[in-house]
Amino acid sequence: MNTLYGGIEAGGTKFVCAVGATPDDFRETRFPTTTTDETISRAIAFFRAQPRVAAIGIASFGPIDLHPDSLTFGYITTTPKPGWRNTDLAGAIRRALDVPVGFDTDVNAAALGEQRWGAARGLDTFIYLTIGTGIGGGGLVSGKLLHGLIHPEMGHIRLPHDFARDPFPGSCPFHGDCLEGLASGPALEKRWGQRAETLPADHSAWELQAHYLALALVNYVCALSPQRIILGGGVMEQPQLFPLIRREVQQLLGGYVQSPAIIENIDAYIVPPGLGKRAGVLGAIALAEIVT
Ligand code: ADP
Ligand code: ZN
Image (cartoon, rainbow, N blue to C red; front, side, top):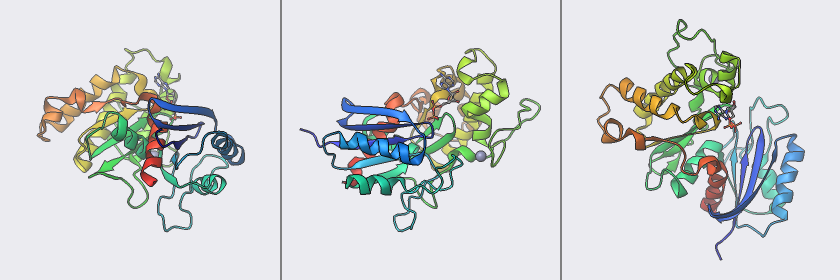
């Protein structure tokens, strides 16, 4: 029998906990993110009721502390989410269940899951972005998960913002019109006065959305040289976005980045997650695998 691993996708709105070994063989439960005590206790109770796992990976919303020698390693740190600031999430799980714990951002974990089982198999330098309630990006560079100073905050990059075309000032509480402030699900809802999922596929919202995402992507292409870009999250459930983004990325790069991946084969370069909505929780399981 395969070794079993545990995974926790710790999101700002819901937690998904899973036990398994591969994408075809795992069981999961999900529950809303409420108070720290209640939510972490529910996660612990789930794992206590399952066969013992070799390790647990936690794919967490952030910001989080990833420095192993820091006093607050494994904590969710400066989140604006009420009640969750300075929460020792990894420590609470490790102490209660007495197993090795892998801890990383939700998007780094999703990237790892995509490399293990999804759309990034065989690649060593690529990024995974989620466009949902927030915008976040993670990935691997030369085979290593991106950490560095803290961890990447790809959702908060600044973009040219043409106020004549788009007078919406942006919704990020820190930056106003950073990428997340212009292109997250809540930004779309504020700009257009209706939830993103209710905007028709031919609404001009999607051209503008593709424009902002393409601007962001060309910056990541130039800064990180990714071999592929995976776009997940609720907003990317709009399939018409992919061709719009691909075309504009090619236009914005202007033929300068001379790779067939971009010039000839962009349909395989900017792609949805191979694991679909399970990228996060399977990524958490992939994180568990690498700590053992
Ligand atoms: P989270 O980021 O909270 O983990 P999601 O990735 O599902 O969760 O993102 C939620 C956001 O995505 C909401 O702002 C919602 O309006 C938007 N969203 C969800 N489904 C769709 C859809 N089919 N089309 C466009 N936007 C969507
Ligand atoms: Zn911001």
